[in-house]
Image: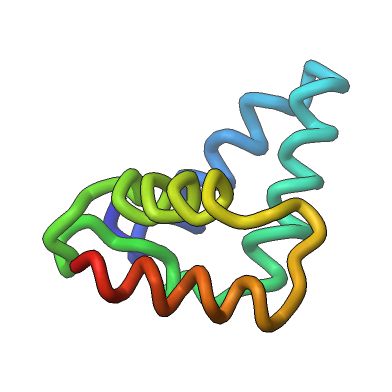
Length: 88
């Protein structure tokens, strides 16, 4: 969605959600965690990026999570990163 229309879309959804308490809880949560916290211009906008989703980021995150220990040591993880870099 074009960032120019996000506020209008939000207001439409908010008005539609007024009759449902659960939906209003989500609307308020979305407002507090996204609309009021971040500049809309910095949201991912599909026309300016090659990828429309963050699947590539999620894939890289999954790879790193599967390689690293749950309680990592600095040196162990640095060694692992260097080892992974050498495979490319």
